[in-house]
Amino acid sequence: MKNERTFVIIKPDGVQRSLIGEVIGRFERIGLKLVGMKMVLPTEEMAKKHYTLDPEWVRKVGEKSIANYGKKGLTPPSNDPLEIGNKVLGNLINYMTSGPVVAMAWQGAHAVGIVRKIVGGTEPLTGDFVLDSYQISDADGRAVRNIIHASGSVDEAKGEIDLWFNDKEIIKYRHIQDAILYDVDLDGILE
Image 1 (cartoon, rainbow, N blue to C red):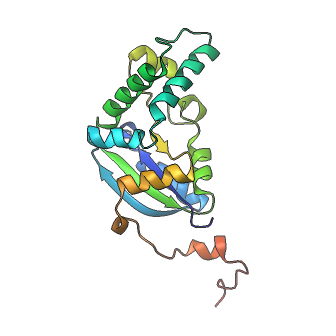
Image 2: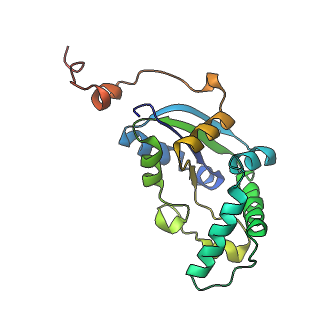
Image 3: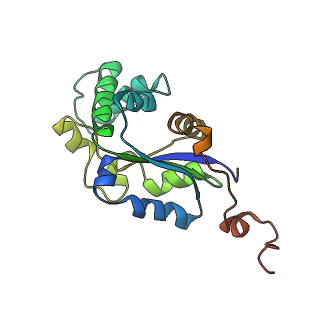
């Protein structure tokens, strides 16, 4: 558990708004260790692979979207989850390929859950830094601009890390804070 890894992308809007350091600082302050990082301009193929690592992703996103319209008392543009899911996917591909992103692998106890807690839900109204919402993005016919993608589970994180990084790009190293966070007796503190 102490070596759990998660995957994070600072999306094009986060890069353009110069929030890279702020995002990294939050994860470092909580005690996570950065084990991989690179700036890339995703291709359409890479963005599509990222979102469809789970073959059921398109259907699930469509179902979730339809349910969210219902919760808000609104009529969805379609009752076909695949149609809506594919529209969401297209919007996300356009968004993710609109500029550079920063892809990162983070490691530490409960990394997936901690990062998800810090970044909030997918809906920007649950986090900070963002004024966007599903309502605005739907009205504009685009992806919601929520600055960060974070893995939702350990399995998802592994798949995403494997997609974005090769083995040589994930660095295994001892970090000085590991002694404070994980040394059972703290006997490595005093000389």
